[in-house]
Structure formats: structure tokens, C-alpha cells
Image 1 (cartoon, rainbow, N blue to C red):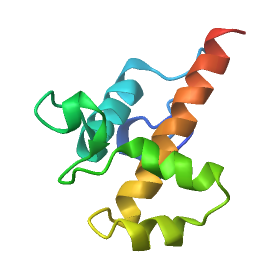
Image 2 (cartoon, rainbow, N blue to C red):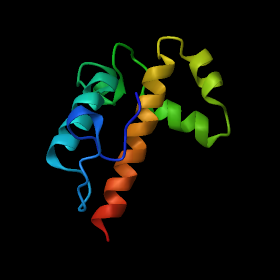
Image 3 (tube, rainbow, N blue to C red):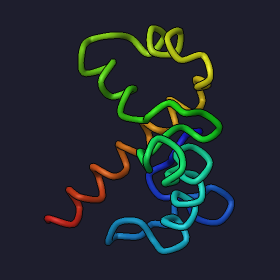
Length: 103
């Protein structure tokens, strides 16, 4: 999954000057639901990759330790490369949202 700067209809930039438009935020939220899941019955509510019991924080722990994405994926074969990349894209978008909110 590739998240663009600000998707509008037909994957064209919506040209919002104040950050993401409402439609683009909805697209991002829908994408997040396909990647990350939180349920009190699974790992006590810790966010996990959809369809797995692998906490999303494990991905960031591996990367923080200097390990590669490939090493993470080898350690957690139930997580697809697409899921891991999508989680990183979501994290990037979250950072951008916070940074834009403090302008």
C-alpha cells in the first residue's frame, strides 16, 4: 500500500492546503483497519497486525534495534511484507499529522 501526499478522487492530489481533506483521512482510516487491529480478547488489546497475534510494536522494536524489515518478516511469517510496509506508512502519516497540527 502506498499512501500519497493527499489522495482525492481517482488518486489525484486533493490540493488541500490545510493538510489532509476529510475524504483522504477516511481513506487512510479505512486502510489502517486492514492493517492494524485491537481487541481486548487478543493480546489484551495490544494493537496487532490483522489476522495475527503479532503486536505492531514488534516491527518498530526490530527497526529500532537496527534489524532489517526482512529479519522482522522472517521472525514473524504470519505478517506479510505489505502489512509491515503499510504499518510503516501509517506511522509516517501519524507523524506528519502531528507535525502539521503544531504549525
